[in-house]
Image (cartoon, rainbow, N blue to C red; front, side, top):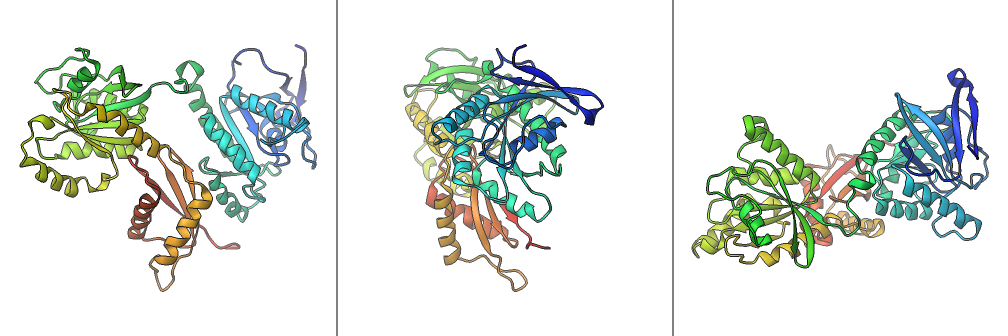
Length: 468
């Protein structure tokens, strides 16, 4: 094959590693990992460490690698292809622009991305720009914080949470520190990437996935039929008619949505049995595959333990949430203030969820469902710029410092949004923050930035002093 040669790998006792230049034709049989990052962060050194041979040219000068070159690699019996790319600078010109274009092409063809950053330099403007591109690309990304040669360097690696690509993994391409654990993460990312093969991925602008869930006989199938204008789903007054999730594409508010009508949940999955047990499992799987959950409640009945358990499932799954109170057409006027009190007492923890009062039987206010879903999804995908987030945090902490323990007040250093869908934040401190103060920060976070319709996760990362 033109442009291909083999190199002996002495480390493995005469094994071979194949180097392929140029663009492979069609989808390769082995999954592909694109190795990207700005110039001189150690991409080629890391490739050599993974492959187990000095195949990629390494020099202490930025920009040695210019084309994308593929290497066959194996870890724990799994074969995959590493694509080493030139230093990626999104705003590059001339030759550098062509190098960046090669890197973007590699990412498009890959199943997963290994993003290499120099932990000793921190997140530069180029790193932040590359991270924004990778977040839009929806490919699984493993963030490698390179040049972490000892435990002290792990503090520098932790600051790379600010890239918004999840937890940075400290590694040393020079010494091999952490390379095995890094490859385990790469294999996990490849599994996710292969699960989202081109035939399985919704195209940009395709139907958003809505899980319609609630306790039995609350009117889920009736709502689907009303939205469709036909008897697409079997409806019966006997609870439990729906056993399997039913996918239905519905045009609502000028947009196509993919609704999944699920079985009513009576009990916890661990307490269910027989057909109900498997229906509960399938309902949980449908929720996991959805982006937003439309939880249906019976407005004429008291909010029950089952209702709260269903809402808890949505929160635990980290999905956007809309509450729909059905059968509003038969609710007495005297019931309205009672329902508001129940919501205040029993659903206070999800006051952030949009609420619609509907009737699946008459079609009352069903046109309000689509705007509520869009609002919840917008909050679910919302990202706060790091600079604005930390300006807000500094003001809040200055006005209300965290309570101390043992006479010491912990110092809140900085925060970063580690992910979206749902929004996840990591706050770095030098000491423990009480649970009450964490809830206070989450409440103030919602007051400042909204996050309507989505759970918000706030994690605290306590960093040790250097040298300890």
